[in-house]
Image 1: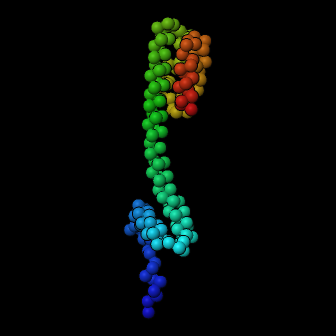
Image 2: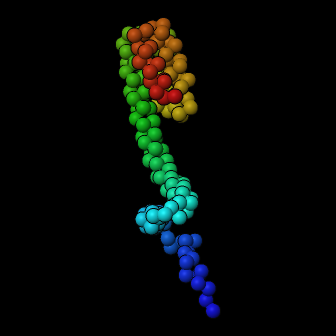
Image 3: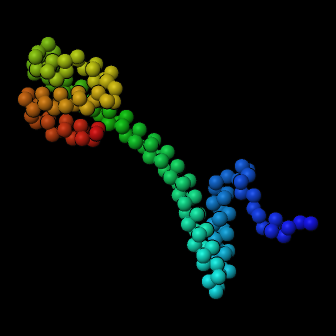
Length: 155
């Protein structure tokens, strides 16, 4: 003999249902249950199901949002690094024109040359900027604010 409760069980543990399908089903279920809740007899069920739905839907949104934010941050970091490299390259050109490439001033900014900036890992950018800002305070004070802003953005 079949149990009548068996007809009311839903096999949501099956992998054939996607998260989106489960969310759609639950949203439809909540809407229909709300329409039938004239006397408030389903208030508790609506509250608990809504909480579970929001938690489950929030997880899906968070995963999608986290992926999008991660991609955006990576693209922003790459763009900022290119901006820093261009600015320091321009600064090297200014120093070369004012003091010469072999001057002590140029070496104070870039002791290993401009290739140090291009070849630097992410963790090495901050110390390079710190050194360049310190040297700029002595030789090119007008550029300190811009370089400090780039450092702040990088951090």
